[in-house]
Image (cartoon, rainbow, N blue to C red; front, side):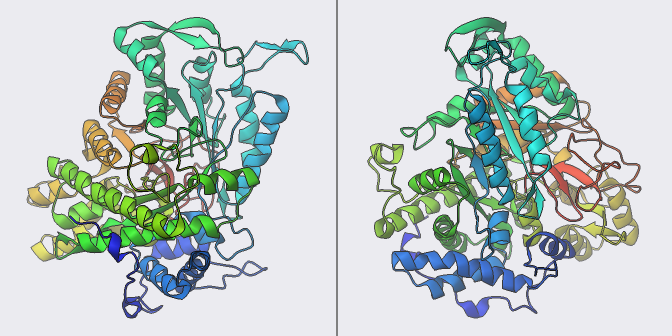
Length: 633
């Protein structure tokens, strides 16, 4: 389809924007907004309504237009309309901090950890400052010398990266992000670091590194050694010399075994990430944000926002013109967000403004498929993912180029892959990312990220302890329209969560096919779906590859091989029932449904650390379906 670059200046008619009375929100959305986002006075009392929150954010972000000669008032109305219709929402720090004293609006940060005691503790301090402002932090510990290595200043032996990670973990324990949520970390170590085996095994103790997601940075050389059944060298980062060799398949099997057991560590294909990085002339990417979808240079941050694909369906058909217009407006919003934000450190502000990376993604993909009558585990779903994300990528690039014509290219543009390709200048080094959208999808009332439904129906415990049966609205509407809805069916669905496997006399076969849940979808289809989106994403994709409880470590290894073959940039797997202390949010007796999935620091009963209610593993990490708490946010 034709580019909508020329429509960048055209804003929706504000008359169509919902009023406060028309701004209908689910009970969960209201809970999440009240608990995390709505402004409070000094005594802790809520002092704004949801519409006022959207006005607050729109006003602060649109204020950046003035510096570029734009119409701040018209842009504010357009931004408000987009958010009030829940067609687009920015990352949580923007919703929490816009117009507030913190003023920090970015979600993702990577902090460098250099090989000296002062540098390590500088990184701890920097991480604390970022997490206090609401950001998530990623670290690569690959620069640290291995355990037992010589320390010249003391004449002693180094402890290695993993013990230092315990210090970062303890610091995070004491921090509540922006006064609203706990901190989150990503810890990454290269597969050729001499301490890689200790790192892979670090979470065998469930009390350790509870505030970290862990991923192994896999190199192309390592994958070639795995394929060749060969050894590979471990390199001391202090000297650059090989220390010894390990058998690649043995290490690969260890990663697969531990991921099979607990879901961690994940893997990131670090050479692939750097090869695709548009600003690789500036430096080397070593780490990602906590959920893995945003690789960043040291000190770099990124702003995220997500388009609700379910909002762009009319009478069973995609409204691609509206999606293109919203993509342009989303890029403008995020570019303004960079200028409107305050930054915890001058180093972060400098490189963030120099590269101006955006992470525009999508949510509500499963709802889009249902509205179009397409089963998630079908070839047509893969084709839809390819088409829709291809549109978002093309239009986001067109929008960035349109902004560059009036605002200038990002300062590090010269020498970037955008520059050397001979194409028109870009305002932003990257424009696209797919984030897990844990809480913002609850506010938007749509499915999270690009994941399938968690369940068609489940029992939700609200804060007062009342248990409510919730059913996907699309399923309820279809069941009522076709005459097979009944209280008994809805009750049974709340117990089992899934419609597949029921007698077709209860739920017709075509409806069972349409309403696929995460564990109805084969692991291979999960990977293919991630790869379809990755083809059109500049950064990376947050996606959980769900495996049944009967899966083996060899199945995990095959998933890693497939993801690498399909050009994914990383993989996170979760085998059903593989972690401790998770209570599923469906089942007749939530207290007895002890299918376990986390090593998080949780209350003694294993519930949500904010409200104590049930958690489930999805959207890239643990999520509370009652209040929306998520370590990844």
